[in-house]
Image (cartoon, rainbow, N blue to C red; front, top):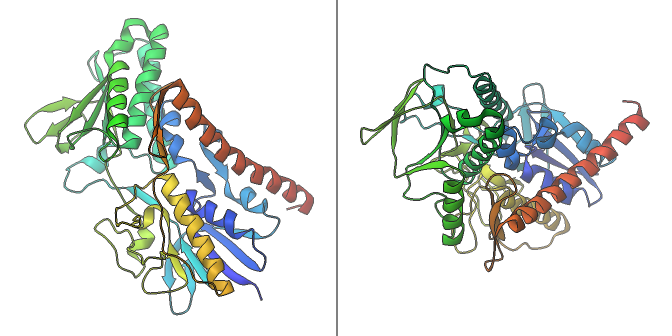
Length: 402
């Protein structure tokens, strides 16, 4: 009898886990996701700024699963609950039994409740629809400037990015670069569009190396981004951001990348959690004292062997996915598993156009076009792997007639 493995979440971690598990025979694998697509969130910065299209950042999960030649089933439904004793996952329509379960539901934007008006007046990038809405606003702004229309009764337009972590920095840099390109079309009007990157920390990219912080800061200044660090947002309304020190900033629209919290499934599932509802697992990434339920990626607090919390990146999600897939095979075959041990192999920051900053293996430091090419190569390899499965799935669908 086949061993049933259920994966909840078609993000970076969920797909990587399936890639590894599908190499082994006698596994019956089901992927459950509330969306019919995989969202390449790491490329959101280029999509928002209009440099990428929808087909560059989203792929069809059903076709991807079909690429495994009937080894993997896709269930397009929202998982609502997990029953550890019955070993079932409840969706909006049915119950699915499992022998092993991987929860890989990712995270959502944490619109902090202590900042009045934040949720109502800003966009996130964790969900494709929010990124799409923000892109429309940005493109509409460029069009109005092209037509020389007055916007909000003023010539000067301020675009705010709340949160100077990786996502916020990349969005700010790409938008500033696109505005610079449009200066050939808009002329002096382009100078009236200003980007503000806001963070409560004393520095951009808190927690990253001095090299990345310094080179990124310089690049942001060169492309015209206004950096406000140590800036605590108290509240915002439709037109104004109010800071705790009494300063204000009029803005046209704002994207917020300043924090994350786990998905709603975590709230409805038993297990020890931290303050942002991420699961706190054991050393083998099991949750709630189980031996057959795992959590990977952004929905779980992941630490290295020394107890340092790992950043919630695609790289971390994929490493935890590979580890859990191997642990499941070890459990099935009766082998003993080692504790989860991962580190950050490298970090690249896209900084507008063909420019990036990055580090690899703790000693290789690159910037500019070289870093851009390396980052592009990593992204392209991932994208190529996805489309290899999609193409195989499309062929299987044609052959199967469904």
